[in-house]
Length: 126
Image (cartoon, rainbow, N blue to C red; front, side, top):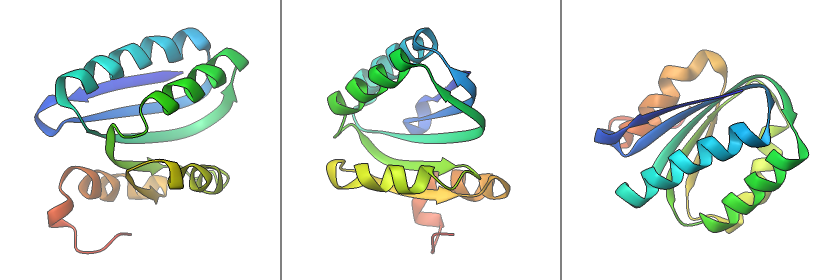
């Protein structure tokens, strides 16, 4: 399941990912995010991942294509998850994106928001 929330005043979106993600859910969220990028240019993303069971093949393929189209459209990405494999997987993509990425545990959700939304107020990454 995907939940999507826009914060226009911060040029940021918050995406919550849980359970299993279908291609239909991914496509609907991707359309909203592409429209948001068109309005704001480079944007920030907070991904909150919990109880994630994976993506169907169509969603995975759509995610891959979306990522290739938008390599330069994100300025910061905060990933909140207690799942250890997201960090190594994301680290593989980091050389190809022009974006600051930080990883946070679920109990540090507010710290992730602070890092993402108000980077000048945070003196060190948690």
